[in-house]
Length: 180
Length: 69
Image (tube, rainbow over all chains, first blue to last red):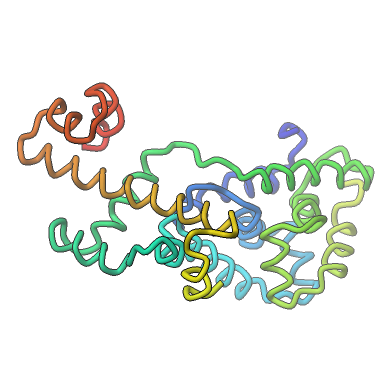
């Protein structure tokens, strides 16, 4: 499938890894790919901005949400009776300021490859189907955008939370991606 | 979901909340382990001593932490 990807689609997949690394994510979901698509000129960004999305605001919002989804989730720990603030305070008393965050970065940095979630893999398969449906031999960024907005996904939720007109954006993405 | 709502479902009637807690606990344990092992090595502990304290084999702890420390 990847041999059919255009340069912009390949870049988006590679850049999604960087987005994940910067946010200390341990998985790549469709939001990471969406950020990568929105940050680069290409059919996906064109469809988003022509569809009335404030691309810079969308990227900032998506990055913030990705970072809040850190594996070390304070609310999830509180649910089993662990006060992350207290753990952090005691840990820093021995290991210095920012020790837990530093350890998290060290663990992430060790992993060469950050895996895609099932949802992100599915969105790439759907992108292929969208390309076939539109009669395109290649899969470009527009198809990736169509793939991640075709069904419910974290990226689709970010877009709808931002008030994006999904039907219009999908229509525009189809326009830029038809028989590309 | 608010923190309070999560606490209310502490034992986890929703598997999603329970699994998220497990994931966070594992992440916390991994980070604490990394910090503790690094410090023990700096204080001159052998890999065997660290392995015994963690209840794992020397090979396991060496493989997991040697590259980083």
